[in-house]
Length: 275
Length: 330
Image (cartoon, each protein chain N blue to C red):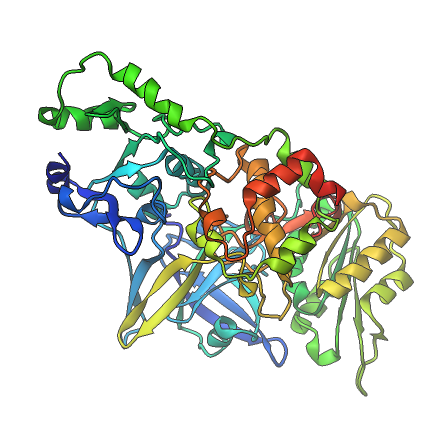
């Protein structure tokens, strides 16, 4: 590692897999390391990706450290930097700094059941957890994944659902806000679907990520089901820049999302000011 | 002596221009001593307003080169820094040092000797004793100059300071013995300086997230950002790229929590959507959040924001309102 915290390492895009009309999963390898293991990350962390001349943005890592061949990021084309990333091609170089931030407490919750609730591209950081716990299947109890998007076309990682479905003692529950002629699954909002499925809070930790409005109602639903604030974990998005607690913009109260987060329990969030 | 220093080091000292500010000087004749505190602190010596982080080159090959922008390690001396600004550097160290080390800032800190100038007078807006700062002391500098009337009393407080004084020993005379007494006499000029009560202020702030106290301040604030620009402890910055034909550079520049874009996300969401929220952020950061992380308040009582705020938002008044309980009772 170099001693300059602002200097990106170079990485090569190995492949770009379109997930939806505006979300692509980038698979990258880091050039200047002796092996991919030098990018030593945990599920829940993020990295700062650069397109030189355009800028840099924090993106959550959607691959699992249990699969060290490459690092993956699922990115929606939204701002300048993400648009520039989408305009690249496999073989192109990008800059990367990180990994930064804390991680999901996957070691602490070994032996427990896991309820993963995602919405839209919010499944990206959760996919790191999903693959991680699948690769350590014996360490966890029942795994329920509840995932929804606006339409069937907005679901991400559809090519992996078949593989996920084969994992023991786990279930993927899909829903969409609006179906279409071909959609055979559930139609309805994620929080409503969650209440219908009624997962038990018994020995269970829930991890959720999605649009803020979904998270709000998912938390209400989880409380109704009997989940306490220590057992509801979420990951936050804030405008970040430096990733290392210097530039001063991502704080919520005295916590920096880039240093102390992005992963927080609901209990921790409730102790923060409404800032 | 300043001439000799300017030969041996990059000498940065107060210069009279449109206002008095710290600048690189070539000779002692450029330096003014006629100030209580320069309009701008010495912050930019360590954390420039704009600074290149690295340059990159692009050619037709797929590779790109990244060259960090590092200055040659020439040693610097800052002459004439006041106790409040010297303390602010100690607070900035807490941000730029730590788990992730900011080498741009820290290298300059390491290469710089601070020559303080003791205060024996103050402005109406000065309130550094609030934060345990003695404006006539050399607590946070390497060398302190105290003007005792017909001569300067010069003291070194660190190894760096002692080494520099030894190197320039020819400029200094033996003590005559009455310097301490003369200094004590001059300290009478500091009597009556504002010293506010800040005991337990972080806890008192915690009671003030809600409530109407910030409404008026938020309404008055124009969001001009002058407070953050002049503040010696404000450290927020933005990072951006400029692209040129054959490459470009990534730079950082000062940013301000007073600006709406500071926290605006690409999704359109803004966690601090109005000026009241932004004003609260600034004062909570100074008086609570920084304290929660570093056990120090992020204000040194230099009074610059008080002097220059176009709508007279006064942090000293706010501290007083919070400490006295007035802020909670409104």
